[in-house]
Length: 69
Image (tube, rainbow, N blue to C red; front, side, top):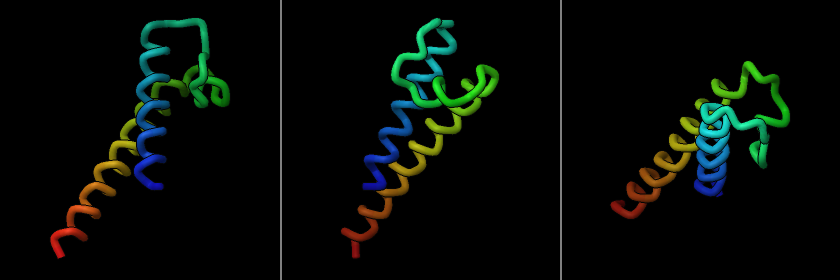
């Protein structure tokens, strides 16, 4: 379940970041673009992507360690 949450955060973060960098006027389905003020879109998108990647990589490392035991 943690891995799924991580993947969702990565998709939302990277997608929202690309949406803002491309200067799209559409907020599409990216949560942070609907909930936060414009000046927070890019920083929050980066944090979401990094947090999601950390969750996915951490879960993968935990599973690998568990298999090795």
